[in-house]
Image 1 (tube, rainbow, N blue to C red):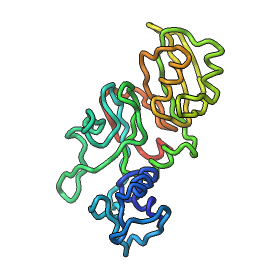
Image 2: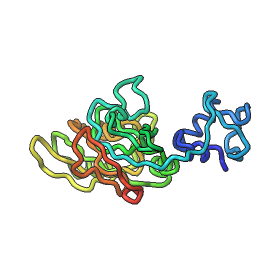
Image 3: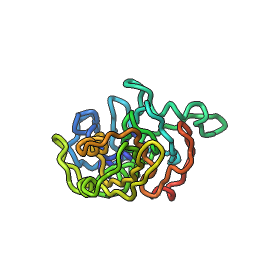
Image 4: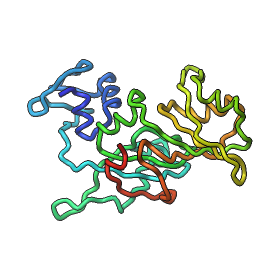
Length: 239
């Protein structure tokens, strides 16, 4: 089994993140730092992450949808601010062998601190890879509130490849623009997502984003889930 797949199936992280850990020298196999793409035998080889032994997860795969409020960050720790995992609180438990234990999950992709909406939490590293890597072209849909209507030129420019600083980003599809109380609601679909890409694209066109909410990841829709709340979902609802 490829090492990055092993790390993903262990519940440590996504395959993409696993490659970063391997490259940074944070992973060892039998006491040595492995090369990229190495194959391992999960039954024989000892894999460690920061000196902690990693094993294939025997836990049930878990999928949770959260409606992230503004002000929370999509990380597994609260070192740099309030983590979205704090929203799970004490209600997130699974009954195991007569006692209640918390299961580890991590966010799929990112949603910046100033944005709100759908965040998927899981311990399924393979699914995380499929939803996060641009080559799979899974859609993410956003509801954006701006002050002024978008012109036909604006819509066309958003749909094209755009240079944003050092990032060359693919175009996005605008499904609808409609007048709402306090401005205009724009419904936009991305198949990749660079850091703060939507805000940077709209800023380039002179539009101020007053509110940005993610409302869909692939098949999974936010629906009417209240801000700050969460619920379990099935994998079939996602992909």
